[in-house]
Image 1 (cartoon, rainbow, N blue to C red):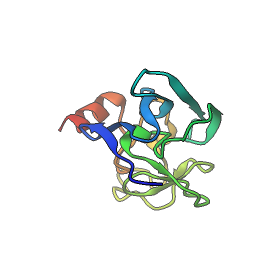
Image 2 (cartoon, one colour):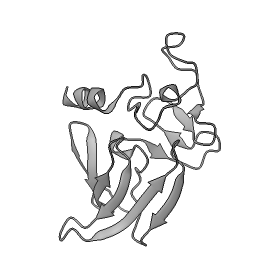
Image 3 (cartoon, one colour):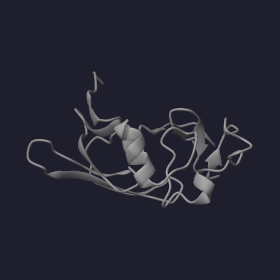
Image 4 (tube, rainbow, N blue to C red):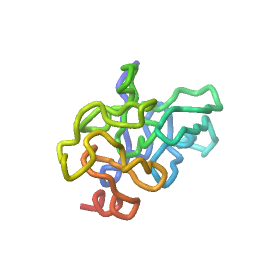
Length: 140
């Protein structure tokens, strides 16, 4: 595969040159991809609360960034640390980090977003925050 160019604004990934434009939810998870030319829907995605993909429709090339992907979270094939979130690895089945939080003991040692990934995100892998705080971080 050749070079993939990413479109981003204020650190948020909006699409890429291979998969197309990203449709996303409030958490920043890619819920679909569409053609940047005519807006045709290519793929859709659904995830479990801790990031495991539970449904995919479509046959087009998947984006590299999916669950919490517009924040830059990458999925890989490492068991118990399937997601790399810029600072640490996260285990989807366990619902926790594979390494101690650098802010521990003020933050829980391994827990992701106080076990509340539906309303909180952790775009830098350092401290959970809600969508409003995430938007403020990206605006800086």
